[in-house]
Length: 481
Image 1 (cartoon, one colour):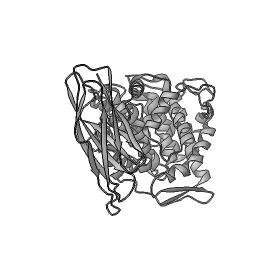
Image 2: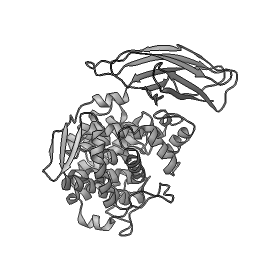
Image 3: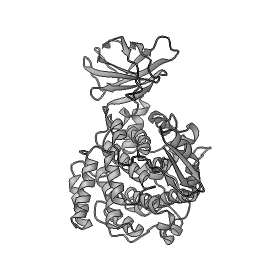
Protein backbone atom coordinates (compact mmCIF):
# COMPACT_ATOMS: atom_id res chain seq x y z
CA UNK A 1 0.00 0.00 0.00
CA UNK A 2 1.52 3.30 -1.12
CA UNK A 3 0.52 6.68 0.24
CA UNK A 4 1.80 9.79 -1.54
CA UNK A 5 1.67 13.08 0.36
CA UNK A 6 2.20 16.48 -1.11
CA UNK A 7 5.34 17.73 0.60
CA UNK A 8 4.15 21.25 1.39
CA UNK A 9 0.76 20.07 2.65
CA UNK A 10 2.21 17.33 4.87
CA UNK A 11 4.89 19.60 6.28
CA UNK A 12 2.32 22.25 7.10
CA UNK A 13 0.20 19.73 9.03
CA UNK A 14 3.21 18.50 11.00
CA UNK A 15 4.31 22.08 11.63
CA UNK A 16 0.78 22.89 12.81
CA UNK A 17 0.86 19.87 15.12
CA UNK A 18 4.01 21.04 16.92
CA UNK A 19 2.98 24.69 17.05
CA UNK A 20 -0.36 23.65 18.54
CA UNK A 21 1.44 21.42 21.03
CA UNK A 22 3.71 24.26 22.15
CA UNK A 23 0.85 26.74 22.43
CA UNK A 24 -1.28 24.36 24.51
CA UNK A 25 1.54 23.38 26.83
CA UNK A 26 2.36 27.03 27.47
CA UNK A 27 -1.20 28.19 27.91
CA UNK A 28 -2.25 25.30 30.14
CA UNK A 29 0.99 24.97 32.09
CA UNK A 30 0.33 27.57 34.80
CA UNK A 31 -2.91 25.81 35.80
CA UNK A 32 -1.70 22.20 35.91
CA UNK A 33 -3.22 20.28 38.81
CA UNK A 34 -6.17 22.61 39.33
CA UNK A 35 -9.16 20.70 40.69
CA UNK A 36 -11.68 23.49 40.21
CA UNK A 37 -13.28 24.81 37.05
CA UNK A 38 -11.25 27.63 35.52
CA UNK A 39 -12.15 30.72 33.55
CA UNK A 40 -9.07 31.61 31.53
CA UNK A 41 -9.22 33.75 28.39
CA UNK A 42 -5.80 33.21 26.82
CA UNK A 43 -2.09 33.41 27.55
CA UNK A 44 -0.91 34.35 31.04
CA UNK A 45 2.82 34.03 30.27
CA UNK A 46 5.28 36.51 28.68
CA UNK A 47 5.22 36.91 24.92
CA UNK A 48 7.81 34.90 23.00
CA UNK A 49 8.58 32.62 25.94
CA UNK A 50 7.08 29.14 25.60
CA UNK A 51 7.02 27.19 28.83
CA UNK A 52 9.13 24.04 29.08
CA UNK A 53 7.00 20.92 29.00
CA UNK A 54 7.77 17.23 29.39
CA UNK A 55 4.95 16.51 26.91
CA UNK A 56 7.24 17.75 24.14
CA UNK A 57 10.62 17.00 25.74
CA UNK A 58 10.28 13.24 25.78
CA UNK A 59 9.35 13.20 22.11
CA UNK A 60 12.63 14.95 21.30
CA UNK A 61 14.41 12.00 22.91
CA UNK A 62 12.37 9.58 20.79
CA UNK A 63 13.38 11.61 17.73
CA UNK A 64 17.01 11.12 18.70
CA UNK A 65 16.46 7.39 19.15
CA UNK A 66 14.91 7.11 15.71
CA UNK A 67 17.66 9.14 14.06
CA UNK A 68 20.41 7.09 15.71
CA UNK A 69 18.87 3.61 15.50
CA UNK A 70 16.29 3.80 12.72
CA UNK A 71 12.71 2.57 13.03
CA UNK A 72 13.10 -0.97 11.69
CA UNK A 73 14.03 -2.80 14.86
CA UNK A 74 13.31 -0.12 17.46
CA UNK A 75 12.01 -1.85 20.57
CA UNK A 76 10.49 -0.76 23.85
CA UNK A 77 13.73 -1.82 25.53
CA UNK A 78 15.68 0.50 23.22
CA UNK A 79 13.44 3.36 24.28
CA UNK A 80 14.01 2.29 27.87
CA UNK A 81 17.75 2.74 27.39
CA UNK A 82 17.12 6.28 26.14
CA UNK A 83 14.91 6.89 29.20
CA UNK A 84 17.79 5.96 31.48
CA UNK A 85 20.37 7.95 29.51
CA UNK A 86 18.64 11.20 28.65
CA UNK A 87 15.39 11.76 30.58
CA UNK A 88 15.85 13.43 33.95
CA UNK A 89 12.53 13.39 35.89
CA UNK A 90 11.77 10.72 38.48
CA UNK A 91 8.25 11.82 39.32
CA UNK A 92 5.21 9.50 39.31
CA UNK A 93 5.20 6.83 36.58
CA UNK A 94 8.42 8.18 35.07
CA UNK A 95 10.32 7.36 38.26
CA UNK A 96 8.67 3.97 38.74
CA UNK A 97 9.39 2.89 35.17
CA UNK A 98 13.01 4.03 35.42
CA UNK A 99 13.52 2.34 38.80
CA UNK A 100 12.23 -0.93 37.37
CA UNK A 101 14.41 -0.59 34.28
CA UNK A 102 17.47 -0.03 36.48
CA UNK A 103 16.59 -3.25 38.33
CA UNK A 104 16.68 -5.13 35.02
CA UNK A 105 12.90 -5.38 34.64
CA UNK A 106 12.00 -5.04 30.97
CA UNK A 107 8.96 -3.55 29.15
CA UNK A 108 6.04 -3.83 29.48
CA UNK A 109 6.62 -5.45 32.87
CA UNK A 110 8.58 -2.42 34.07
CA UNK A 111 5.45 -0.30 33.67
CA UNK A 112 3.36 -2.66 35.80
CA UNK A 113 5.50 -3.51 38.84
CA UNK A 114 4.79 -1.28 41.88
CA UNK A 115 2.72 0.98 39.65
CA UNK A 116 -0.92 0.34 40.56
CA UNK A 117 -1.84 4.05 40.70
CA UNK A 118 0.33 5.77 38.11
CA UNK A 119 -0.03 3.20 35.32
CA UNK A 120 -3.41 4.80 34.62
CA UNK A 121 -2.02 8.33 34.50
CA UNK A 122 -1.16 10.83 31.78
CA UNK A 123 2.52 10.37 31.01
CA UNK A 124 2.16 8.44 27.74
CA UNK A 125 -0.76 9.82 25.73
CA UNK A 126 0.85 13.26 25.94
CA UNK A 127 3.83 12.07 23.87
CA UNK A 128 2.09 10.42 20.91
CA UNK A 129 2.52 13.11 18.24
CA UNK A 130 5.93 11.80 17.14
CA UNK A 131 4.41 8.41 16.30
CA UNK A 132 1.41 9.92 14.50
CA UNK A 133 3.55 12.31 12.45
CA UNK A 134 5.90 9.50 11.42
CA UNK A 135 2.92 7.40 10.29
CA UNK A 136 0.46 9.85 8.71
CA UNK A 137 -2.79 8.20 7.71
CA UNK A 138 -1.84 4.81 9.12
CA UNK A 139 -3.12 4.50 12.71
CA UNK A 140 -2.27 0.79 12.96
CA UNK A 141 1.40 1.67 12.41
CA UNK A 142 1.26 4.61 14.81
CA UNK A 143 -0.20 2.53 17.64
CA UNK A 144 2.58 -0.07 17.39
CA UNK A 145 5.13 2.62 18.18
CA UNK A 146 2.88 4.27 20.77
CA UNK A 147 2.46 0.95 22.59
CA UNK A 148 6.23 0.37 22.72
CA UNK A 149 6.60 3.84 24.21
CA UNK A 150 3.68 3.82 26.65
CA UNK A 151 4.25 0.37 28.13
CA UNK A 152 7.61 1.39 29.59
CA UNK A 153 6.01 3.46 32.35
CA UNK A 154 2.36 2.31 32.13
CA UNK A 155 2.51 -1.42 31.44
CA UNK A 156 -0.78 -2.54 29.93
CA UNK A 157 -3.22 -0.24 31.68
CA UNK A 158 -5.39 2.77 31.07
CA UNK A 159 -2.37 4.99 30.45
CA UNK A 160 -1.35 2.77 27.54
CA UNK A 161 -4.91 2.50 26.21
CA UNK A 162 -5.03 6.30 26.25
CA UNK A 163 -1.78 6.54 24.26
CA UNK A 164 -3.06 4.11 21.65
CA UNK A 165 -6.38 5.98 21.37
CA UNK A 166 -4.70 9.37 20.90
CA UNK A 167 -1.99 8.10 18.54
CA UNK A 168 -4.60 6.47 16.29
CA UNK A 169 -6.76 9.58 16.25
CA UNK A 170 -3.80 11.87 15.46
CA UNK A 171 -2.46 9.60 12.71
CA UNK A 172 -5.86 9.34 11.06
CA UNK A 173 -6.25 13.14 11.26
CA UNK A 174 -3.75 13.47 8.41
CA UNK A 175 -6.33 12.01 6.02
CA UNK A 176 -9.66 12.53 7.86
CA UNK A 177 -10.93 15.84 9.27
CA UNK A 178 -14.27 14.77 10.82
CA UNK A 179 -13.68 14.68 14.57
CA UNK A 180 -16.45 12.15 15.20
CA UNK A 181 -14.92 9.76 12.70
CA UNK A 182 -11.53 10.29 14.28
CA UNK A 183 -12.94 9.48 17.71
CA UNK A 184 -14.48 6.28 16.35
CA UNK A 185 -11.11 5.30 14.84
CA UNK A 186 -9.42 5.80 18.19
CA UNK A 187 -12.08 3.77 20.00
CA UNK A 188 -11.64 0.92 17.53
CA UNK A 189 -8.05 0.49 18.72
CA UNK A 190 -8.70 0.01 22.46
CA UNK A 191 -10.75 -2.52 24.45
CA UNK A 192 -14.43 -1.54 24.46
CA UNK A 193 -14.74 -2.18 28.19
CA UNK A 194 -11.67 -0.21 29.33
CA UNK A 195 -12.14 2.96 31.36
CA UNK A 196 -10.61 5.06 28.60
CA UNK A 197 -13.34 3.96 26.19
CA UNK A 198 -16.06 4.45 28.80
CA UNK A 199 -14.97 8.05 29.44
CA UNK A 200 -15.12 8.90 25.74
CA UNK A 201 -18.52 7.22 25.40
CA UNK A 202 -19.88 9.21 28.36
CA UNK A 203 -18.62 12.39 26.69
CA UNK A 204 -20.26 11.50 23.36
CA UNK A 205 -23.58 10.56 24.98
CA UNK A 206 -23.73 13.86 26.86
CA UNK A 207 -22.73 15.87 23.83
CA UNK A 208 -25.29 14.18 21.59
CA UNK A 209 -28.01 14.74 24.19
CA UNK A 210 -27.33 18.45 24.47
CA UNK A 211 -25.76 18.38 27.92
CA UNK A 212 -23.63 21.50 28.53
CA UNK A 213 -19.86 21.18 28.78
CA UNK A 214 -19.63 22.06 32.48
CA UNK A 215 -22.06 19.28 33.43
CA UNK A 216 -20.22 16.89 31.14
CA UNK A 217 -16.91 17.82 32.72
CA UNK A 218 -18.35 17.18 36.18
CA UNK A 219 -19.78 13.83 35.05
CA UNK A 220 -16.32 12.81 33.82
CA UNK A 221 -14.76 13.81 37.14
CA UNK A 222 -17.33 11.74 39.02
CA UNK A 223 -16.83 8.75 36.73
CA UNK A 224 -13.11 8.73 37.53
CA UNK A 225 -13.19 9.72 41.19
CA UNK A 226 -12.47 6.17 42.36
CA UNK A 227 -9.14 6.08 40.49
CA UNK A 228 -8.10 9.58 41.53
CA UNK A 229 -6.90 12.80 39.98
CA UNK A 230 -4.35 13.13 37.18
CA UNK A 231 -5.58 9.98 35.45
CA UNK A 232 -5.80 9.34 31.72
CA UNK A 233 -9.50 8.55 31.11
CA UNK A 234 -10.90 11.88 32.32
CA UNK A 235 -8.05 13.99 30.98
CA UNK A 236 -8.11 12.58 27.45
CA UNK A 237 -11.87 13.11 27.54
CA UNK A 238 -11.30 16.75 28.59
CA UNK A 239 -9.17 17.28 25.47
CA UNK A 240 -11.82 15.77 23.20
CA UNK A 241 -14.52 17.70 25.10
CA UNK A 242 -12.68 20.90 24.22
CA UNK A 243 -12.72 20.10 20.51
CA UNK A 244 -16.37 18.98 20.46
CA UNK A 245 -17.81 21.82 22.52
CA UNK A 246 -15.36 24.27 20.98
CA UNK A 247 -16.77 23.27 17.59
CA UNK A 248 -13.28 22.86 16.18
CA UNK A 249 -12.42 26.53 16.69
CA UNK A 250 -8.81 26.59 17.87
CA UNK A 251 -9.12 29.24 20.58
CA UNK A 252 -12.50 28.15 21.90
CA UNK A 253 -11.51 24.48 21.93
CA UNK A 254 -8.26 25.03 23.80
CA UNK A 255 -9.74 27.41 26.36
CA UNK A 256 -12.64 25.02 27.02
CA UNK A 257 -10.26 22.11 27.61
CA UNK A 258 -8.09 24.15 29.98
CA UNK A 259 -11.12 25.38 31.89
CA UNK A 260 -11.93 21.75 32.75
CA UNK A 261 -8.90 21.83 35.06
CA UNK A 262 -6.74 18.85 36.10
CA UNK A 263 -3.72 18.16 33.83
CA UNK A 264 -4.26 21.34 31.84
CA UNK A 265 -0.95 21.54 29.99
CA UNK A 266 -1.52 18.00 28.66
CA UNK A 267 -5.15 18.48 27.62
CA UNK A 268 -4.49 21.83 25.93
CA UNK A 269 -1.36 20.60 24.15
CA UNK A 270 -3.25 17.63 22.71
CA UNK A 271 -6.10 19.86 21.54
CA UNK A 272 -3.51 22.01 19.79
CA UNK A 273 -1.76 19.10 18.13
CA UNK A 274 -4.97 17.47 16.87
CA UNK A 275 -6.36 20.69 15.41
CA UNK A 276 -2.93 21.56 14.04
CA UNK A 277 -2.85 18.29 12.11
CA UNK A 278 -6.41 18.62 10.83
CA UNK A 279 -6.21 22.24 9.70
CA UNK A 280 -2.49 22.94 9.37
CA UNK A 281 -1.00 26.26 10.39
CA UNK A 282 -3.84 28.17 8.72
CA UNK A 283 -6.18 26.86 11.41
CA UNK A 284 -4.10 28.32 14.24
CA UNK A 285 -4.80 32.01 14.92
CA UNK A 286 -1.89 34.17 13.76
CA UNK A 287 -1.81 36.21 16.98
CA UNK A 288 -1.40 33.06 19.07
CA UNK A 289 1.34 31.76 16.75
CA UNK A 290 3.23 35.05 16.96
CA UNK A 291 2.85 35.20 20.73
CA UNK A 292 4.44 31.80 21.31
CA UNK A 293 7.19 32.07 18.70
CA UNK A 294 9.29 29.23 17.31
CA UNK A 295 11.49 28.28 20.29
CA UNK A 296 11.45 24.97 22.15
CA UNK A 297 12.40 25.26 25.82
CA UNK A 298 13.27 21.98 27.52
CA UNK A 299 13.00 20.93 31.15
CA UNK A 300 13.25 17.13 31.24
CA UNK A 301 16.25 16.29 29.05
CA UNK A 302 19.85 15.73 30.08
CA UNK A 303 21.33 17.88 27.31
CA UNK A 304 24.96 17.12 28.19
CA UNK A 305 27.67 18.46 25.91
CA UNK A 306 26.19 16.90 22.76
CA UNK A 307 22.51 17.83 22.74
CA UNK A 308 21.42 16.75 19.23
CA UNK A 309 17.93 17.99 19.95
CA UNK A 310 15.91 20.48 17.89
CA UNK A 311 15.66 23.86 19.55
CA UNK A 312 12.91 25.21 17.31
CA UNK A 313 9.57 23.96 16.02
CA UNK A 314 10.83 24.51 12.48
CA UNK A 315 13.84 22.23 12.98
CA UNK A 316 11.69 19.60 14.71
CA UNK A 317 9.27 19.62 11.79
CA UNK A 318 12.01 19.22 9.19
CA UNK A 319 13.71 16.38 11.05
CA UNK A 320 10.45 14.47 11.44
CA UNK A 321 9.76 14.91 7.73
CA UNK A 322 13.09 13.25 6.87
CA UNK A 323 12.20 10.16 8.90
CA UNK A 324 8.73 9.50 7.49
CA UNK A 325 9.68 7.35 4.45
CA UNK A 326 11.92 5.06 6.52
CA UNK A 327 9.32 4.79 9.31
CA UNK A 328 6.69 3.80 6.77
CA UNK A 329 8.99 1.22 5.20
CA UNK A 330 9.37 -0.47 8.59
CA UNK A 331 5.69 -1.45 8.52
CA UNK A 332 4.66 -4.39 6.37
CA UNK A 333 2.71 -3.59 3.17
CA UNK A 334 2.92 0.16 3.79
CA UNK A 335 5.04 2.79 2.10
CA UNK A 336 5.00 6.59 2.11
CA UNK A 337 6.29 8.82 -0.64
CA UNK A 338 6.55 12.59 -0.37
CA UNK A 339 6.51 14.56 -3.62
CA UNK A 340 5.38 17.83 -5.11
CA UNK A 341 2.38 16.05 -6.63
CA UNK A 342 -1.08 16.34 -5.04
CA UNK A 343 -1.72 14.11 -2.05
CA UNK A 344 -3.08 10.76 -3.21
CA UNK A 345 -3.52 8.15 -0.53
CA UNK A 346 -4.76 4.62 -0.71
CA UNK A 347 -5.63 4.70 2.94
CA UNK A 348 -5.00 1.62 5.09
CA UNK A 349 -7.98 0.40 7.09
CA UNK A 350 -8.59 3.17 9.60
CA UNK A 351 -11.13 1.38 11.78
CA UNK A 352 -9.70 -2.15 11.98
CA UNK A 353 -8.98 -3.61 15.41
CA UNK A 354 -6.75 -6.58 14.52
CA UNK A 355 -3.43 -4.85 15.19
CA UNK A 356 -4.73 -3.42 18.45
CA UNK A 357 -5.85 -6.87 19.63
CA UNK A 358 -2.39 -8.22 18.92
CA UNK A 359 -0.90 -5.52 21.14
CA UNK A 360 -3.13 -6.21 24.12
CA UNK A 361 -3.53 -9.98 24.01
CA UNK A 362 -0.83 -10.62 26.59
CA UNK A 363 -0.32 -10.52 30.34
CA UNK A 364 0.58 -7.21 31.94
CA UNK A 365 3.30 -9.16 33.77
CA UNK A 366 5.26 -9.98 30.62
CA UNK A 367 8.29 -8.82 28.67
CA UNK A 368 9.90 -9.38 25.27
CA UNK A 369 13.24 -11.02 24.52
CA UNK A 370 15.41 -11.09 21.41
CA UNK A 371 16.91 -14.59 21.14
CA UNK A 372 18.76 -14.13 17.86
CA UNK A 373 17.07 -17.03 16.06
CA UNK A 374 13.69 -15.78 17.27
CA UNK A 375 11.85 -13.70 19.83
CA UNK A 376 10.14 -14.65 23.06
CA UNK A 377 7.35 -13.33 25.22
CA UNK A 378 7.97 -14.24 28.86
CA UNK A 379 4.94 -14.01 31.16
CA UNK A 380 4.67 -14.34 34.94
CA UNK A 381 1.38 -15.57 36.37
CA UNK A 382 1.42 -12.71 38.91
CA UNK A 383 3.51 -9.71 39.87
CA UNK A 384 7.13 -11.01 40.06
CA UNK A 385 7.63 -10.71 43.80
CA UNK A 386 8.65 -13.71 45.86
CA UNK A 387 9.27 -14.58 49.51
CA UNK A 388 11.16 -17.58 50.95
CA UNK A 389 9.45 -20.83 50.03
CA UNK A 390 6.97 -19.19 47.65
CA UNK A 391 6.41 -20.21 44.02
CA UNK A 392 5.59 -18.29 40.86
CA UNK A 393 4.61 -19.55 37.41
CA UNK A 394 6.38 -18.47 34.22
CA UNK A 395 5.40 -19.11 30.59
CA UNK A 396 7.99 -18.78 27.82
CA UNK A 397 6.56 -18.46 24.33
CA UNK A 398 9.08 -18.43 21.48
CA UNK A 399 8.43 -17.12 17.98
CA UNK A 400 10.91 -18.17 15.30
CA UNK A 401 12.05 -15.66 12.70
CA UNK A 402 12.19 -18.06 9.80
CA UNK A 403 9.29 -19.56 7.87
CA UNK A 404 8.50 -23.26 7.68
CA UNK A 405 11.45 -24.50 9.74
CA UNK A 406 10.66 -26.74 12.72
CA UNK A 407 13.22 -26.60 15.48
CA UNK A 408 14.08 -28.31 18.76
CA UNK A 409 14.97 -25.94 21.59
CA UNK A 410 16.88 -26.68 24.78
CA UNK A 411 16.50 -24.62 27.95
CA UNK A 412 18.82 -24.18 30.93
CA UNK A 413 18.36 -22.18 34.14
CA UNK A 414 21.04 -20.75 36.43
CA UNK A 415 19.37 -19.98 39.75
CA UNK A 416 20.31 -18.32 43.05
CA UNK A 417 21.21 -20.68 45.89
CA UNK A 418 18.18 -22.62 47.07
CA UNK A 419 15.92 -21.71 44.14
CA UNK A 420 14.48 -24.46 41.95
CA UNK A 421 12.79 -24.47 38.54
CA UNK A 422 10.44 -27.23 37.45
CA UNK A 423 9.38 -27.66 33.83
CA UNK A 424 10.66 -29.00 30.50
CA UNK A 425 14.31 -28.56 29.55
CA UNK A 426 13.54 -29.07 25.86
CA UNK A 427 10.57 -28.32 23.67
CA UNK A 428 9.61 -28.35 20.02
CA UNK A 429 9.05 -25.25 17.90
CA UNK A 430 6.58 -25.99 15.11
CA UNK A 431 7.02 -24.90 11.52
CA UNK A 432 5.43 -21.66 10.39
CA UNK A 433 2.77 -21.53 7.69
CA UNK A 434 2.53 -18.98 4.92
CA UNK A 435 -1.19 -19.69 4.52
CA UNK A 436 -1.95 -19.00 8.17
CA UNK A 437 0.42 -16.00 8.33
CA UNK A 438 2.25 -16.96 11.48
CA UNK A 439 5.84 -17.71 12.39
CA UNK A 440 6.93 -20.98 14.02
CA UNK A 441 6.22 -20.83 17.71
CA UNK A 442 6.34 -22.87 20.88
CA UNK A 443 5.43 -22.50 24.53
CA UNK A 444 6.48 -24.03 27.83
CA UNK A 445 5.39 -23.52 31.44
CA UNK A 446 7.67 -23.42 34.48
CA UNK A 447 7.32 -23.06 38.24
CA UNK A 448 10.02 -21.22 40.16
CA UNK A 449 10.25 -21.87 43.89
CA UNK A 450 12.37 -19.74 46.22
CA UNK A 451 14.69 -21.25 48.81
CA UNK A 452 14.92 -20.41 52.49
CA UNK A 453 16.23 -16.91 51.79
CA UNK A 454 15.62 -14.30 49.12
CA UNK A 455 17.44 -11.11 48.20
CA UNK A 456 15.92 -7.74 47.32
CA UNK A 457 16.64 -8.64 43.69
CA UNK A 458 16.78 -12.29 42.62
CA UNK A 459 18.13 -13.06 39.15
CA UNK A 460 17.60 -16.31 37.26
CA UNK A 461 19.55 -16.62 34.02
CA UNK A 462 17.73 -18.44 31.22
CA UNK A 463 19.60 -19.92 28.27
CA UNK A 464 17.63 -21.08 25.21
CA UNK A 465 19.60 -22.77 22.47
CA UNK A 466 18.44 -23.88 19.05
CA UNK A 467 20.94 -26.61 18.03
CA UNK A 468 22.47 -25.96 14.64
CA UNK A 469 22.08 -22.20 14.93
CA UNK A 470 24.84 -19.82 16.06
CA UNK A 471 22.73 -17.57 18.28
CA UNK A 472 22.31 -18.28 21.98
CA UNK A 473 19.27 -16.75 23.64
CA UNK A 474 20.17 -15.38 27.06
CA UNK A 475 17.93 -13.36 29.35
CA UNK A 476 17.15 -12.85 33.02
CA UNK A 477 14.06 -13.55 35.05
CA UNK A 478 13.91 -10.88 37.75
CA UNK A 479 12.09 -11.64 40.99
CA UNK A 480 11.78 -8.95 43.66
CA UNK A 481 12.23 -10.12 47.23
